[in-house]
Amino acid sequence: MTDRCNLRCQYCMPEAEYVWLPRQDILDFEEVGRLVDRFVELGVDRARLTGGEPLVRRDLPRLVELLARKPGLRDLAMTTNGVLLEEQAAGLKAAGLHRVTVSLDTLRPERFEALTRSRALDRVVAGIEAAARAGFASVKIDSVVIRGVNEDELSALIEFGMRVGAEVRFIEYMDVGGATRWSPEKVVSRAEILGSVARRFGPVVPLPERTSAPAERFRLADGTVFGIISSVTAPFCGACDRSRLTADGIWYRCLYATRGTDLRRPLRAGASDAELRELIAEPWSQRADRGAEERLALRGRAPLATVDALRRDPHLEMHTRGG
Ligand code: SF4
Image (tube, rainbow, N blue to C red; front, side, top):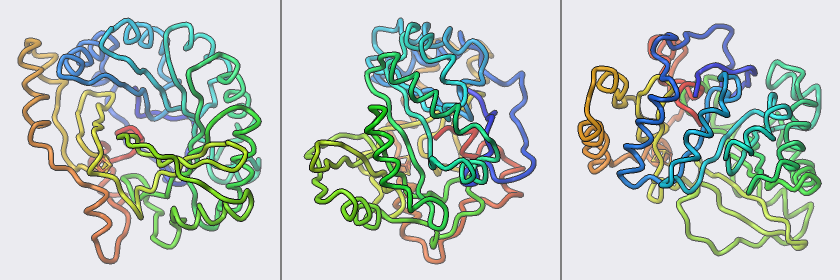
């Protein structure tokens, strides 16, 4: 939806300055809708709105309404940092949004400020509570776990999720574009996360599921369910059926891909629906992306891109590509 964000999280936007996408390149809602139609015609039936922070995009409920009307889309979700969610939750639900995921890595105000360079923790919590009240099909909380930062808060986050009725998913700290402070030592692995949760809550039982969703899900003795997205230590590229369309219409078939397909230029140059479909179908039929698995095989693994490389090509940034 946008490459802009109202937070500056250490694992995504740690630098002081960024190169932004030119405003005239940002697709308007009708252009987004036209591309979504082509994806739906080719079999896509789920969409997720991300950013940057999608709620800083003006009139977002209007796009939600436009997408929710498409019969082929059976699932319409959004990932947000939650800062603007309290005032928008009811409107987004009314517009037809099905599910919401809120990123929240800590419940401690001073830690939140150090991690995000913002004092908006109360607003994020209020946003999650408002989403829970609004009646979405699900509200989830995504927490990136970073050693030395928040690995001591896993139980507190699960308990918070229980209180507000949100499923918590722990995400291994990934070396994606923008994570310029990443190092292997800071990754808290799936195994460590499971050990930590089991020490606090007792036996953790994996749920027998086979889906293309990135999270493995587990159940605690009291029935509480939580997830782990182990993209670093146990990647799941073989089951991945996702791709990402940036706010300026570049289509990436992997989180780690260095090149994407420009759909904006042909769209604005008058390409027919059939031509746009072909631009999508052909590369997808040849897709062999295995970004996270290839990263796992690397020795001396370091951040994906240097700050200079990110300035030269902001499309490498996670906040441009969408998480
Ligand atoms: S690294 Fe790429 S192929 Fe692997 S799961 Fe992520 S997006 Fe899919």
